[in-house]
Every structure is written in C-alpha cells, then in structure tokens.
Length: 410
Image 1 (cartoon, rainbow, N blue to C red):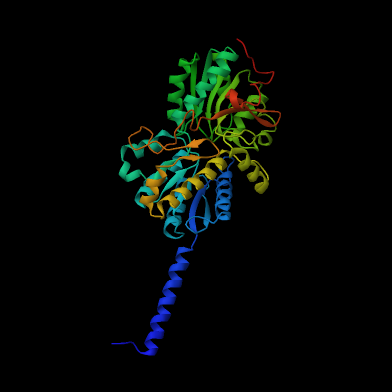
Image 2: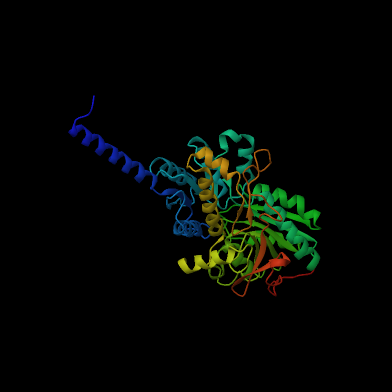
C-alpha cells in the first residue's frame, strides 16, 4: 500500500526532524565537571587550568566534532557539598567526566559515588594512598577513579631524594623533626618520611602531628627547638600561611624543608608579607621552569588570562582535561567504561611530566607513575618574591639559601 501525498509529507517531516535532533545531539558539548575549592589558595587554579585546556581543544575543532564545556562547582572545601555537586553534575548537568578536589578527604568521599554512578573521575591534587588502594582492592567497582597527582608515598620518596642532595650532601644536615598536619594525605606521607629519611642519612628526632585548625604554632616550634634538629620536614597543605609567618616572626633557627602546598601558590609571598623567604617545597611544576615543553607556555597563558601564574592544581587540571579528551577521542564515545579503558592507556606529555597510570595489578592502581621519565617533581624555594627551582640540578635556577636567622650548623 502506497502512502498518500499527505502521509508522505508527514513521514518526510518526521525524518527531517529526527535527523536534525540526532545531529543536534551529536553536536552537544562534552561537559566536564570541575569540583574545586575555588575560594582557597590551592584550589582556585583548578577551574582556570581546565578552562584553558578546553579553549585550546575547542580552537582545534573539539573532540569528535563536539566542543568541551567546563562546568565548575564550588565545594567550599566540604565533602558534603562535593557529593551534592557530584550528584548534580551527573544527574542534571549530564557531564561525561569529573575533575575533583585537591583534598584527600573529599576525593575519598566522592570515590564511592564515582563507582555508584559509573562516572570517570580524576583528582588534580589529592595525595592519599587510600585513593589508589581502594581501586586496587576492588577494581571492578572503583575503576572509575583516577589519581592525577603524586601519591603521598611518592611525594615522601621524592622529598627524601632531594634531602639527600640538598640537606645531607650540601649542608651536612644529620637530624630532622617531622611536622605534619593531621590529615588523610599525611598519614602515609609521614610513614614514608620515617622510612626514607634515615636511609638518606637523616635521623628523625621528633614527629609532631597537629590539627589543621591550629592558629598558634609557638608551642610546636618551642618543642621542636628543644630537640635541636637541623631541619623541620613538613607535610602541610590546609595550613601554610600561619606557620610560615610565625617561623619568620619568631626567628625559629631551624631550616624548613618538605611539602608546603600553599607555598605553591603564586600569591604566597604576598599572603605571608614576605615571610615565605627561604621556605622550600616539593612541587610538580613552577612557571619559569620547562619541566616539559608545555610547562612554560601553559603558565604564561594562565597568567595572561587570569593575571597570576597558576597554583599546582592549575597545571594538573589542564593536563587532566587533555587526558579525558584524548580518551574520549580514542574511544570514539563518552561511554564511561570505554573511557576508563582508554584513560588506562594514557601516554601523555603534560605540563608536569610524562603521564601514565599504574595498572590494576600495581600497588597504586590508577595513580600516575612517579620517577625519572614520568612525573619526578622538583623542589623550589621562595627567594626575593620568586619561586626559584633548586632541585634537581638539571632544571635548577639557583641554590638553596636560608635567611640569616636560620642556623645551618649545630
């Protein structure tokens, strides 16, 4: 039976409508959610770094003919707010992946939701070994989470490697006190410190863990001074300004070393009114050092767009968007399981090094590979309002120098 002329017109119209709908759907942007501590020193750069990557990708035609759209959520440094943002990102905003938080407690709270909602998630800055441990222990459930930053264990080892060259070999230091905030990421960090510092020639004479809510570090510094260590090896992120200002104002005669995540922010010098002078920290990148050929161009683009160089989460969020976009391109789809499979095959030269992920049978499943040839880190020190890279020697801009009030020999 042949359709009538009217029916033919109707069928044709429906076909055109459906074709247009399919075309419109295929041209919809690929949304990437960014859940970040936008009011904090360390988290403010996360959405900015992600946006620059999206802009670059979109300028080259996007992915699978679709634009990348960054959707940002301020989690107010709260796990509960992060979970609500994650649920909204998936159910309402229909994102295809999430870049989430530099706070380990937040990422650990989100990890079960990534599993439940089958949503690929990568952290640009959390460090706790527990994140990768959960993936390793129950891969099929937790495979949707990726660890886009150095684990605490990796950071501890890099700090010790740097301490061997800078503190032991150059300054002849023999002792140190560990001073870390009580947080999820510092538990494995401190275990790493206690194991590797003695191996490089540094005896641990004291180990202090303090509440991140601490405002007066005077008693802590007084206690440490009583043990007369050559250095204070830190593991601090949620704090940073206060202990730095008090270290300077009280003329604590002990060299700082280790990790001070807030010091990675380009505003840290002004935040501390210059008390940061002489404060070193482990980092993955700094604006003026070519960790890879992509590091300096990205830092310059970030500064041009936002008026200041990026904090560390800017570099990693930038890399993460590219990792996600390339996985979608290789998969030919935003299907989460196909994306995960392709993210596992990542071989990407980012701003912080060559990025690959450990496999399901490795101890740190879905963590980024650390060490020479991968992400190996660097140590910078604040000197005269500038972040000066002092280690490793092949990319160092200067030498480790402490203020005069610091006693360099016992």
